[in-house]
Length: 328
Image (cartoon, one colour):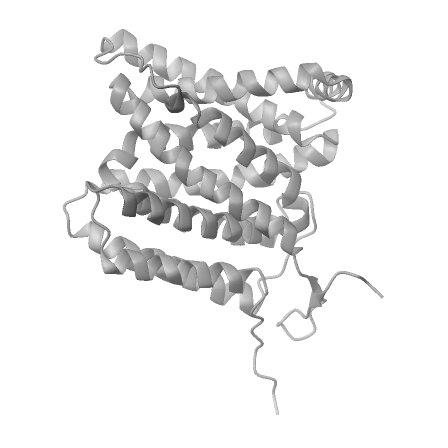
């Protein structure tokens, strides 16, 4: 008998779908809380520098340096990184799975650019919409380290509730003349996060190292953001200055923990369930941060939408199983 609890697929004739282990969901939720904190730190850094491009590069670059130190200090990780680079160069591994870091780079840039306008909560729920839709689609086609996962009733209802909850939480923000571009960018970034999660899982399965997968993300992301920062500074001189507060340089290290955890755990959860768990943590963290910020007004709709998003995440994970009515 399997020790892992299973829930039946709600589609008639479907196979049993393993429920994601609670410990994996708990770790991802904790990572989601950290991701919300990262959003605020990156936004504050961008405000000090007066350059979201440079802030994003600094954040990603610090995360990349931290991972380099870890990987280079561990012999097994060094070997895995060397073999991974060789496999890409020789064509033994599809290079398209190695560019997931572009999704992370775009998310970090978007955080720096829009959180100051939207607030953490509104930014996060916009990301959630794209992340949820991408997760459902990617699981269905099997984009990730596991097999394709059918869109069961729980997954469909949970995903629909997630999007509806996001729309509810966004409703009050839309009345405050928030530029549409500031809502579209986080939504697209959410889709990129879904693609990044699936690709990272594939890289982890190939290399046997979630640290190598994360390092590939941060290396590529740092290069992309470095180019963007250089172009931006060439066109517009830096208006601010590098802050002396060391806390503002922790965003990249916080992002490191989230990316590494996602790369390691997506094989246990799939993209959609992982996204749902991360969303739950992000919403909890973002609402708490906005509640502590006197300059941000949390509307009742945002709070209600956030609560419903948490419920949706639980449904997606299969802990509140929903079944289709059986024919007479």
